[in-house]
Figure 1 (cartoon, rainbow over the protein chains, first blue to last red):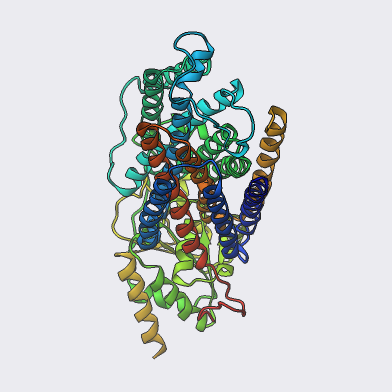
Figure 2 (tube, chains in turn brown, cyan):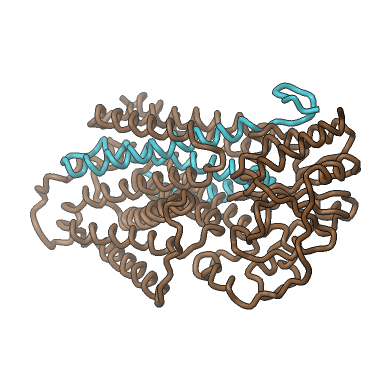
Length: 491
Length: 102
């Protein structure tokens, strides 16, 4: 059966290659669509190859589990709204972490017998769990107990995977709105640290070869608990960074468990995601002007109540018809969408409005803050869904120098990312965060539901600026009014 | 057998590969990429299948079954969500897949 092994190895190799090429293609808007398809083929290849492994048992059970898992995830992934993407990514990521933890668990449990025997602590070698071969791809090689390195990586992967699993589920629940409150209590950091230290300590005992079901259970219990504790105090605004971090965690866990299983495709795919995810996490944290440590251990909202600068002036309202006229006769209009627009499902109307402006010869661009929406790039997805071509969408660094030459900046559903206090008020919790300098435009129109504060609960000086006018109303309704006002103008 | 240092080389090269791929990505693709990389670690499904394929006792089978279930969810969910997001990217410049943009 040597040829079968070769075929299977070749499949894994191809899968790893397709993953890397797929990810590469996904990093450019033009080839991105093909990238995921390539990676998908790789996955299919790897799964089929695994089913062909000669020493596999329980094939019926495996196929049943695969079908159920695929069907459930496919169904949920198809019907979920684009605005809910971040929490779905969190959910699927948590599942991956859980799977990695399960692999670790079954490895450890499978070796309860032989390792204990190895240490001479108990029992003869007749332990019923002793596997003929745990090295799946190398059925021919002699059965060996897990090497110290494999055991260490297996335990580490299980720890990271468990944290990613429970942490991602909490992140999902928070973004889904099931968990509104931030759970903060005195001494929280100490408790978290103790949970982690205890998990690591038990992990170290496991690595030393003292495997027992009780210890393994305690290890996983503590690891899962730590994931929950670590995520609970983190506020909704920081969640994307955390999800991205857990994504990298799962990648690492997969790579480590891949080492234990001697599966190179898992090592490569997991490690690529581990490092790419880490970099992505850093980019996101940087875009939000938060360090990772700050996100994980500083409690965001805690500062928000502190002494903020008083704001002079008042908010000046404007009617939709006037706003429409203002933009119709402008030369350059920049639309700044925020998550509020997406929640109101206003992106289609906004794009319709933009198209009418473009038809009149107005130069329209969409300016996107790196953290507009719930994740970096989330807003691009939402605009793309409405049909906005990606070359009209401009990043923060590129659009900021253009604001002084912009006649009207239309801010719709965005708040903190256009708040000038990030530059002027050191007491503000968002102080230092890079913002879109919409206040530099000649006129600013802000579409906003009411006079309240934004997602992060921070007062916004922009709304009181001399060149700013407030168009109160639900994003969807306001955009509709703008469209009809523009149409009457044309008629 | 995958010996220690050979594995170390794989770990290192894969890490650099991931870093290099992501380092020049426009912000516009961050969310799809996060979702895409989320799909790619769905390869954990393969590991879970191997674990279940070697399970002997009902307890081990139970853990393996849950693992495969979760891994399959990761892979399938990650794929669908990423594909849906990327499907929507199009350019206003003439070419195929062009919307009604003017």
